Image 1 (cartoon, helix red, strand yellow):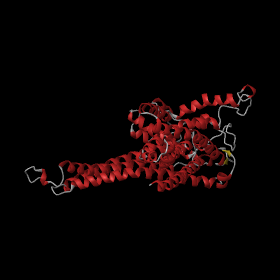
Image 2 (image 1 turned 90 degrees about the vertical axis):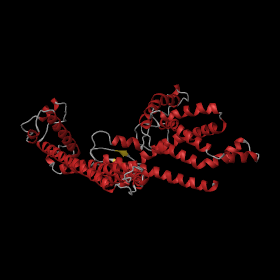
Image 3 (image 1 turned 90 degrees about the horizontal axis):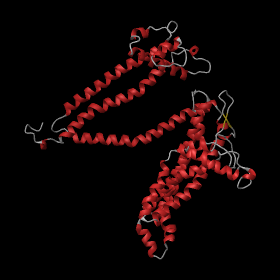
Length: 467
């Protein structure tokens, strides 16, 4: 293509761009179709098989979701016995649940089923296998054809005047745009998934009881009281205590490290402080349950033998226990971010304040902190969001009692803890006791979004003052 003399200056682009263009046209469309197919095929097959299961095949206390789980396990088990030569494909397609002990056959091959195989479930599993096999065949065929078509197209368009570099750069730009859109699309997907399930919940349960009731008492046999207010109270109460611990300590630590500590002390103290952020939350929960809780009981809960001579605390789990430990966990979030933000304040502002006669402490209080306030608010917001979404510390340190009380020495629970509880075990996504988890999650999302809006307002207000 370089006019026979091999001079690459006769090409519009460097040779490697032509190669990258061919690779993009060959791989990208084929991989895109492959990903879409892999995502869509299981849902389409599940819906098709789901409709063939009669109501008589669903045992009392079970659900179609559980039956579909048995169908998928049985279909996988049938593939196993074919691969291992126990039966061939023709024998599997003619199996009869009434004459063959499939459960024993599969158990001998290491595939365990929870119960005996009924004929409708076997028929559904065979249909699932057949459609999956057909889908895989057409997927491979279509992806191969698209890849070959892309390769042929790349050969047809490649010539000395082809703007290969422009095409490759457009492809990279598209990749960057898709990467930047992932966070937005993920957020939209999360919100929509919670929204649709929340709508299903409010069709089964009164929204007035959910938002304005005062009792949380789920009962999977019906007649449940599912009010968010006791959970919301516990969430906010524990988060406020945690922030009262984390914000002052973290902010004062950041001020000391950035304005007073020497280089050697700072290089040692800051990494040690940030180690707190790497400790698993389950470890914090154990620390709350085994150390902080008993210490508070010794102070407030042993009657005349206690340090205060009172008995206000009956157990190691309480709002104060979880709040104190969560506050310790949040210290590095506040201190590290605040330290970086304070260091980002221009040195000229400090020099100007000191040149006008202000002391070091006055400069920090009246110049540095106001200039860094928007970033500090962002650090506090991050800590608040982390506190609201915490689960393990609350499970082990605060208890599981949903109630509204102003006593920080009593056990309470939070929204995240109840979400985990409602979705633990074999769940039926048709009952309000399970669907309430999505309504709780959506409410938690709206609460966090409100905190972000408030913080954005504060940041903009003070940025106008110091720009």
